[in-house]
Length: 320
Figure 1: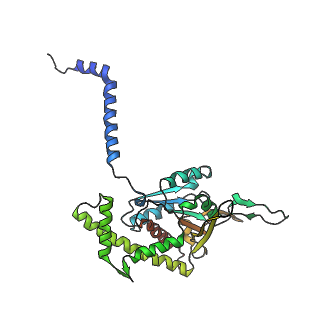
Figure 2: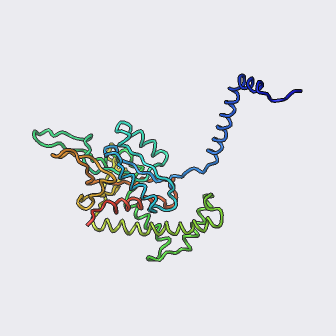
């Protein structure tokens, strides 16, 4: 049998079977892509740090992105955070904000949101008396809380839970390193964490875990210092049913800028526009942050949010 490959035979093969050849190549690529997708380790909610920007704010600026990247490269977070993301609802648009928020929160995506504690014009109530200014039923913080209260952390409980968590490992300011390592090893075994299988990786992970706990310890004291000095304030809110039954009540936001003279640089991170006699200006007065709370963020990793918020506060403070 003559099986010699000739130029003519190749031309005939390509003429009649080129579609089959292309289809076979595409099939091979798709199969390999599917294999890699199915075998890849998925990023967990605790490994992705995501910042939301409220739809009535100004869109995230270049200075926000510069600072956000710096928190990652500058070792603000612990080893657990391996990816940053943002959900800029101001860029998405008011008409799409609810849909996007619902989609993201349904998959436990989100750690903090910047949102102003100022009157929400959508809740304006015109006065029945002539020449009297309108009132507002809600501020933006309350509007957002009314819709998404089940996803928002009570700040007092958040801080109390952090204090309780740290008490496992600290006697005063002395860290029980052995206890930290024991719990780290147990969690890696329970979760079958692929990052910590080899001896050298386990040893490196133990050191990183000790650093994580120390960061939370420092962050707690730093944040309490900001509260005690009046630099920041907690914002109380309450949500009720139509019948008046209280569903949740407490401090659910942190006002990062109750005094704009002390936090002038916060507009680098988050701002809204106001109209003055000189025209439109950026303001961050009474800009708040809320902490998201998801059940599937495991084992204290929700405190990465406090590391980020402290970094924002440090940047925002007026120098001198």
